[in-house]
Structure formats: structure tokens, C-alpha cells
Image (tube, rainbow, N blue to C red):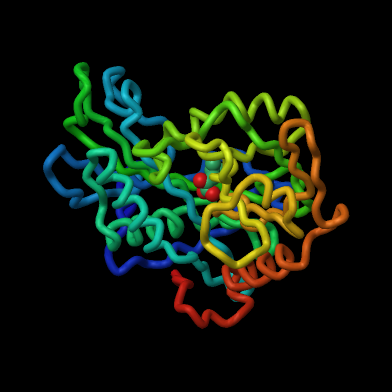
Length: 324
Ligand code: COI
């Protein structure tokens, strides 16, 4: 690694940056933003490919008020996590899957995208440069937030002339304030997260702004989050604002809200939420509870299997772990 002024260039192959842990309260991490040391930035012009990025000191970025992302929402984000193992090694979980999803989203949003290799190398470099912010084993993880945005100026509606791929990181603990205890969801029947032909299938930033109204109203009433139904028949489950939802039945198909209310166990999944058991769902004033105030068996088993794999405590039979 070559440190020149406030720009930290990482030579290839990546060298391991050893550092002391940051001086923060590792026992009380929630899911809030905390500035760290470095961010990764790579730019390219429209019609070209990303070629070379660099680590920079973490800080605010400058954008023209007319940037595509600010005016027309031309942007995507990703989320993945790095874990510190007891032996000090650092693990990533399937980073190439995030890279592939970003590429698919970029195609939908008319943006160039980093290659899978560029994405994974940039993630590794950012994690290593911020190594002192990776929580000790068992205390949480380093949440990695890649962004892809139209950073060039536009006025008329069109793809931006320049794109920025940026990665920043923040140490995190549990996503919901309930911690690992079951969460309470409410079904939303008026507002929708996705529409046929829309952008619900990609991780564009506007999908998330669109649910803030329903999410804020639900939180004000004491719910943990909102479960959305399809916009056409208003009957089938889609997603929760911040995560996916599963009911205990191993089938991949449309699930109606009536079946949901009949389920034995319900849980949410996502990079941020990991596996969160659902304790209740309220739909049109009817509240159905699951798991007798405890964590359901399947949720518990999946949570343990996933986190022990991500933390390097169990054998990686699928080849999903990338060790830095
Ligand atoms: C993630 O799990 O990384 C997400 O996209 C959730 C985000 C809304 C915090």
C-alpha cells in the first residue's frame, strides 16, 4: 500500500494493513452510520468502462447540483458484511453475488458497472484499509456499502455523462432495536414497493425512499417494519422495507397474505437484518402471533448456520467465503 497525502493507493496484490482496533464501544453497536478511515472511489464517463479506482480519506463528496443521481435518482446500492475471525483473519460472504446484482441493476438503470473482479477487489481494498473498524468476533460486523451513481450533470432527462462507484463502510451490530428477539410487522395495503415493469427487481435507491412514508407511520405505531403486498392483486407478499420475508415452507412461489396469517413461523432475511424472527404480523387490524414470544426453530437454525459460516466457525462446504 502506498500512502500519498490523503490518498491511499493499494498496490496489487493487496498487502494486509495491520492496525489496532478503533476506540469505540464495541458492546453497543446498532445499525447506525459511523465514519471510518477510507472510502473507495472509481469514476468513468458514459459509454466507457470503469478502469482504475483509489482509496481516499473518508469524507464528503462533491457533486454538481445537476448530477443525475440528485435530480433523477440514477443510482444503485449494495450491502455486504466483513467479519473478523478469532484467528484475526477477515471474511467476506459471497461478494461476487453482490457484484453480479449490481451489474444487473446497472443495466436496468442505464449505467456502466464495475466488473465482478473490480467490485470484489475494491471491496477487499476498502475493508483492509478500514481494518481497525471491523468489530471483534461476536460483537458485530463491518457493513460495506457500495454505491453506483450518475454523478455527471444533466438537465434534460437522460443518463448522466459520468458515473461514480464508491464504497464506504461502517461497523454494525443488530439492525432492529429488538436485537435477536422477534420483530412485529404490519401489512401495508395502500402503498406499494414494486410495480410490474418497474424497478422493484433491482436495488435502486428510489425503491427505498418510496417506502419511508409507510415505514415511518408503522414505526410511530410501534411496529418494527412494514410488509408490502403486490400492487396488482394486493394479495401476494413482496418484501419488508429493509429485508426479505420467508414463511416456513420450502417452496419458491407467490404466497398470499391469508397463507401468511396461517403460517407456523415467519422470518425476515437480508444482509443488514441477517435472519430476524417475526413475532407478529398485523393485517387490516387483525394481529397474528408466531413463535409464542420466542424464536422459532427454523429461524434459530438458519440464523446459527448462516452466522457461524459467515464468522468462519463452521466448514464452508459451498465455497461461499472469501478470506482476505
Ligand atoms: C441490506 O440488507 O444491505 C439492505 O439493503 C437493507 C438496507 C435498507 C439497510
